Image 1: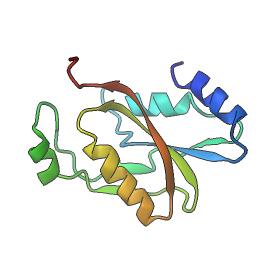
Image 2 (image 1 turned 60 degrees about the horizontal axis):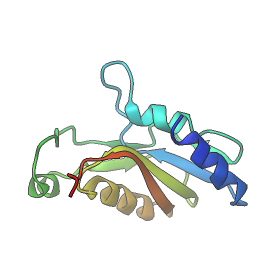
Image 3 (image 1 turned 90 degrees about the vertical axis):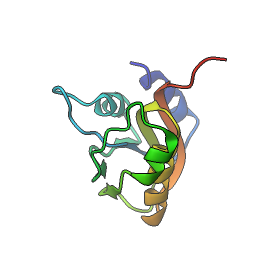
Image 4 (image 1 turned 135 degrees about the vertical axis):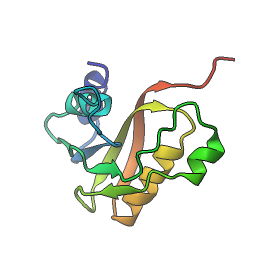
Length: 126
């Protein structure tokens, strides 16, 4: 429900097709937060690529400092369309390292990242 209105507005102002790539749609406790977000965005000219950006590294980053994240990259594998424009989707942004690593992998596959959407930012309020 959150990203669908945004995508409707986006589609009205954009002529071409866009692909949605969820970051690490790994199913935990019966569902994936990211998969729920990406699925809601599907509509005419918006193509969801389920489980196309998956991490080989299953290390838990929760509560870990930036250096730990840098020392233990996600090691993404991309299995989606090449040569397309994409919107990256993730549930939570903590440091931005995951989004940066995903963008790098996509660029290696001739994929243009337009921008990223996240549900929440863990940055502490000022």
